[in-house]
Length: 409
View 1 (cartoon, rainbow, N blue to C red):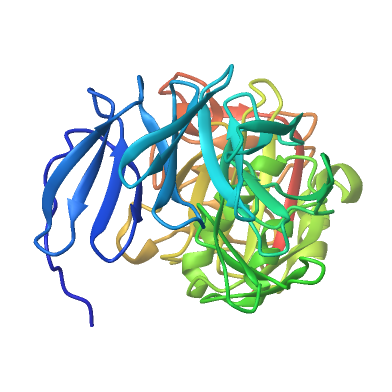
View 2: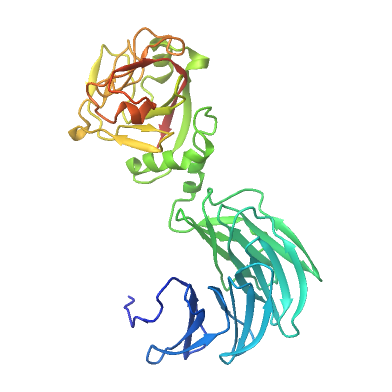
């Protein structure tokens, strides 16, 4: 059980980096002006002194392998080597320096704001190499491994490994993206040389030391990483929307993984009630996507109930919801306990609420105005939010296409 020992007060702006220099000192730096490093005494937790040298924000501080040495970098395009709390040597670059790490005992590796990587010997201040990385977005973190490889990760989802070869560098990148298009951070290397990475979606990954292949995920189900594969064959759902839809559905199933199976597509199977029911009846939970033919709005609904061909009845479903992909918005049922959330009947297609969305019995949904969005009930959301028409009148319209997916928990 951890408890708070002390609160160190002195910074007035964001802290970007903190290290333990030895048993006596902590060092911190960030978006302060004046642009100073703060030295804290860990015996009494008092601010002991401030170190001047940077002319802009401090982005990163690292402890070097050489005793009593540490380095800092910042927006002033400088890397400063410090010895016993004194400015020992400074090296300047053309762009702000975002991150640095210590390679072997005498080399500094860094990355700048234009995603270039440099390596130099801080003992003699000689530049060894300076090359462009393969990243197309901001590099979040950089780590030097025990076998002298360099690992970088960016604000999208790419991790790359660089292997030194004398004075030039060659790189290897992973053949697939494992962090589901979210910011990746390299955390640390374990004693048995496993690489630990994490991302902004809560995934924590462990990589084996030999080939840096994915080995396992900590604290979540291993299948969780596959959730992003849902709706891959959809012509309506865009790739960058899958995670959003996943987040809408996952809580209904205790945040466990699920699969999606395409049951029905109007353009392929027929745009009428009998075709819909022949493909979708008695299957289980489904999500429906369709596109408004005029506005281009992409919307739909989810229900935990199976569609059926009974005579026609309303059913309560507290988990049902409608959504607008264009507005990136989910609309839960407004009625207590999901009262009359869906209507099941052989003469209709998907039907949500008091005809918040309804595919009527006439069919020809892709060519005639036989899809309805009624103004009278609003069990879920407004017409404008759902289909992009600013009106208080009931709307009827054709669709470009519709897809229904089975959700397999």
